[in-house]
Image 1 (tube, rainbow, N blue to C red):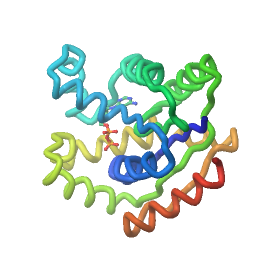
Image 2 (spheres, protein in one colour):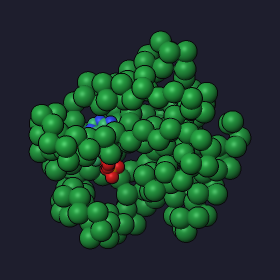
Image 3 (cartoon, rainbow, N blue to C red):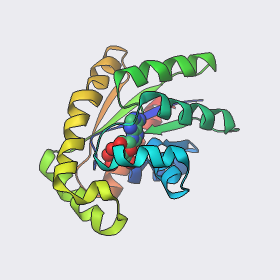
Amino acid sequence: MVNFLIFGPPGSGKGTQSVRLAEKFNLTHLSTGDMLRAEIAAGTSLGKRMSSIMSKGELVPDEVVIELIASKIDKTKNTAGFLFDGFPRTVEQTVSLENMLEKRNMKIDSMLVLEVDHDELVKRLLARAELSGRPDDKDPAVIESRIDVYKSKTEPIIDYCRKKGLYRPVNGVGAIEDIFERLSEQIRIII
Ligand code: ADP
């Protein structure tokens, strides 16, 4: 079993690339953003509580996403590994993930980081809003706040993982197919 974090700011293309990579390498794609949006769409009480936090571009509480992830891991059988997308988002979540994996005889094997400049991110998210209907993509102020949250709370995970020798940066600008090839190359080095 090999487990990857796919990392990068909002709009860096994690979701798009994860779906393809999961299929190609037989990995299970776990996106906390997708899981939370599914809770909202299903009208669960958890979804109702999380939707206002998410529409402001803030992070939901660590224990919520940790629970969601643990229960998905335990339900998944016969996988080559996991591709964690949008999780962890804080150093605390990273430590929780490591502990959770250790208990199951697993570990984080590599961190793939999509690098995309700020103006390109904003452009992509505003364009996505037209298609996705996501409320957190529509408002430029919410986009800026998500990018700020990424810089202050999420980016420190890169240093944490770099010290463990897990960090693999990938140029996230260009054609989707070319970025997919760059990521695939990195995955082949690990598996
Ligand atoms: P993006 O990467 O485009 O910002 P996601 O789909 O990953 O979007 O997440 C959407 C929102 O869901 C986030 O802005 C946040 O409010 C919430 N969320 C998703 N994953 C987490 C997480 N691991 N911890 C806290 N909040 C999260």
